Image 1: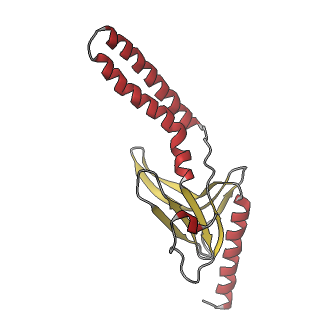
Image 2: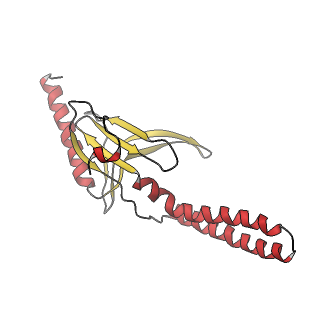
Image 3: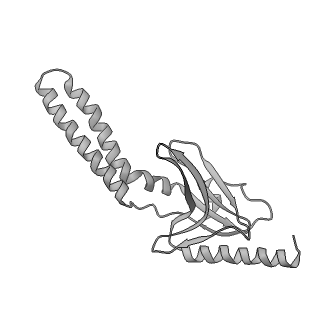
Length: 183
């Protein structure tokens, strides 16, 4: 894949070199959290169907109340399955000789481009697997549950070891440059 294919032309500096490009795997991943959300959504939808049946028997518009909740339950259930894969399918990763770039082009939102400088001191972690992860940063997230640090990087990639090696080689070159006094 080439970054020119994604509509992100012009993001590289003239003397910047692409070392690797890829995309996260876009398949459905059913972890505990998404399974629970799916199950709760289906339960909510099932309860809504019961409300619709009772409402229809009352010959009024009570079934409409149940129908609205049915839609909420179904969107909750199937959103748990398809939201993250859809987001990953519209995400591109680029590693250059200077930085890691994560580009996103969501269906219903603005494009975003996050760029992270790779230095000799950047902490890089490999989480190896069939779909591995190379983490190169953390950011602070604040939500209803409080504030916490979340690791980020290139996630759900097949060539995680190669990307990790490229990043370590880049750091070695930066250290060697630093030791010889080159800038």
